[in-house]
Amino acid sequence: MKNIIFKILAVLMVFLQLSCKKFLDIDPPKESLVGSEIFKNDDVATSAMTGVYQNMIANGYASGSTTGITALTGFSADEFISHNSSLTEFYDNQLTPLNGTIANSLYYAPYRHIYAVNSILEGLSNANSVSTLVKAQLQGEALFVRAFIYFYLVNLFGEIPLHTTSDYRITQIAPKSSIANVYSQILKDLKQAELLLSDNYITIERVRPNKGAVLALLARVYLYTGDFVNAEKHASQVIDKASYKMVAVNEVFLKNSQEAIWQLMPNPNNNTSEGLTFILAAAPTFATLRPNFVLNAFEANDSRKINWIGSYGTHYFPFKYKVRSSATVTEYSMVMRLAEQYLIRAEARAAQDNISGAIEDVDVIRGRANLPLLKNSNPNIGKVELSTIIQKERRVELFAEWGHRWLDLKRTGQASAVLAPLKPQWQNTDRFYPIPQTEIDRNPNVTQTEGY
Image 1 (tube, rainbow, N blue to C red):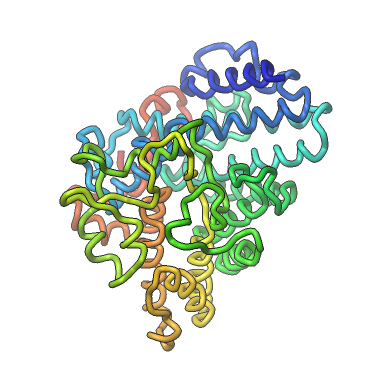
Image 2: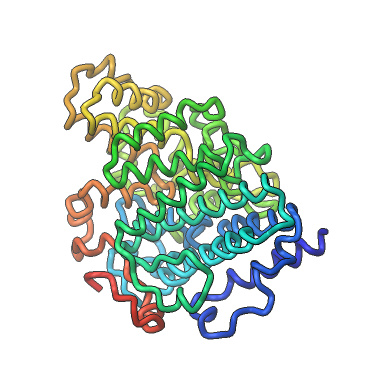
């Protein structure tokens, strides 16, 4: 069995390390993810899905490293200062279609993982040797992961090709889909996943998505698409689950934290790439937090500023993860957590004029941060002021996590107002990244993002 699993993971690694262009320039591999051996029993089928997670955390957009979404969008927004000339295009918002990091980390890597989960879904559909329960679990996970990846692709690039098959004859000429159509597919996948996954995690860890993760992503998607009724509904379903609770600030990012909805397990014998990437042990060579954020975004005595920001000399860095490097693994990479759900529900409630309900949710976040509660300090707050406070709380609660700041600036229409004073060459079309030139050259049906 160990040899079979190793073989499958090796095949998956080869698939995911090849570029999409190379995939399309060669004959399909003789050894396919959808081959009968991959789905010969429950354990081997499961290894195909866990292999996707291992590859997500290994490098690129989901890794938490220098090429991850957190770092790159932090430069694009107003979170980080760049200390590396190779990131100047992100920091100045002067990206071009020739940027290799855009191509390798933010575009082709996600599509490789989409190819993998599409292959898994196709293989499971004909896998008679996989038990019904395991098949449902794996199908639910694959659909969730596909929706999660497309959520980031559509928010980073706007209109994108929508691949729901592993058939190269289709994907290599797929045109761009509208943002609305991509969101429609995301919702379709998540609604199917909700039916397939249970409330329980499949292991003692929180590294394989369950129904709670699906509901959490649904809440986020509904918020982004302006469906505030459903955003509130799905966030409430997550908040009401006994599996999740708010924990002390310094316990949030521990492995299997009760605030965690979905985490990614670091590579064996390593703590998170976020810790290694951002914690300063010497003069910075990559990224530090903008001093204006550190000095002005937080209220006095905010425990998040005290506990989540570190300093080295005159430089500040994200200190949510406390371990820079250690073989004893105590932290996992946090992908989705409960605090976001309270903030989603607060924003959705405020949009529906449920001011008291929104205050209640914001106060959960503020109370944990040791700040005065709005119900006491400003009980008669108006909708506009409350909405501003909610966005401020999102900024200080979710900074340096999965691009929340970059996406929030864009979806709330604040990107130009905030970034133009900081970045002299800023244009509103910089809200979306360029499609890699290699993709434009390869697929005649894909057009470039406006402004590039």
